[in-house]
Length: 229
Image 1 (cartoon, rainbow, N blue to C red):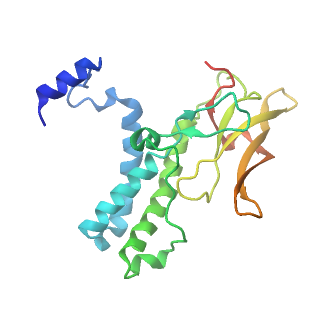
Image 2 (cartoon, one colour; image 1 turned 180 degrees about the horizontal axis):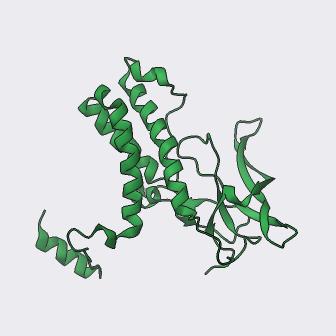
């Protein structure tokens, strides 16, 4: 790499690199917190199953894990469409492709770690990473503190992320708040959501179907406000 050429290209595009000082990882709180969750889950996974991995399978595992982490939702792309809740992910920016990256078809179980097919061993480990990392990552989006102050309640029009156990790998289900159900004290503890699911017609073509479900607010993560702010 030619550093002078890189600097010249970046200057022409009005790009400026700002680096954190050495030994100051706390300067990057947002991404360092994400790195910590990945490292914690990955360390436990390798401690338990690392002896069965070769250099090739370990490299494949790293790429699969990167795809899972970079498939997390950042924000919603089309707020004006009430039926569209397609999130923007880092994979969209990295691959420049609108289609999500789906995992291989099939189910992978614990017995696959002893299979002769090394790709099945890797896929089983990726499934384990997805299950464990999602439980570590979601609480970072929904911080829980002592309720000394009342916060703004969930309102109709807001876009939320559903917390669902057993969701397929890389699946982040989005929904839009349609109605709120305040309690006797005026606080909202459950809401009605509009969700969109893709179903196949008789001709085998995909069709988007809208349905309404009720969920408690502790199973939701606010992703975007109803306003453009």
